[in-house]
Amino acid sequence: MNSSTNNLALITKTQTLIAAGDIVGAEGALVELADAEGDAALMVVLEQLPAKDVLAIIREYDNSKESVINLLVTPEQFARAVVIEKQYKDLTRAHLRGMVNSIIFRDDADSTEFLTAIGDLEGGSDALADYFSEKWSRVEAFARTGSFDAMEDHGDMLSQDELLAKAYEKPKLEQDEIADKDWMQLAWILRYELPDLFIEMLLVLRAKASAFDAGYGDDEAQEEDDGKVETGDTDRGKATPAKRDSDEESAI
Image (cartoon, rainbow, N blue to C red):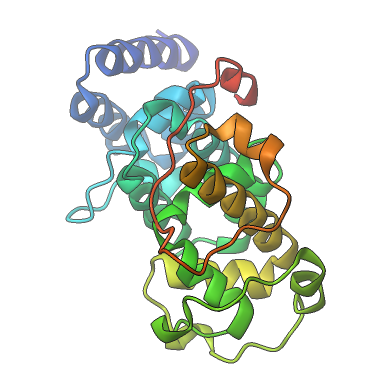
């Protein structure tokens, strides 16, 4: 049996296990391949797996153990998985944040390469906005002041023009001062290394927060937002309802 046939059999087995809800078994089958034939063989299989199946495995990240899948997934594979994660309708965003952190901050990762790959896809800035959904007021404060001081959470929001004007400011904080391998560090990387994507993400996040307060869904948020969301009264750091998009598979 040649390697192509073996790969097809493994892909079929992996997809069957995922469909049955056995994510651990599916990951185990892929790990066995890596152990037997090396990482290169696993990367070939990962390239052939649909994004929804890669997502099913990497979103179950367990920070108590290192996953060879998370170590080998490419920026493009990861981005395709990230933009369809909302199909799970996990309003806590816990799985989204966990899998993003586990890959963006892995030791050998070029964080900007992974984030750029997400931003290049339709729905990428939307997925990043979901990642920050519980930290909206903190991210707004960071955009305005360059710090993560909670005392700054309730100031006025910057307009899009003001955000653009501040896009290439020197950081007030160095990255190693906030290197939490979590939302603060990700916000820092976006603002200072990918400022256009940071602004795009923040505008989407504002639209989602405004829609959540008004009782709208995500699609209505895009239509209703005028870029002037009032933030002073409440902490909008809450997840917004995700809407399943039947067209998301087109991102694969």
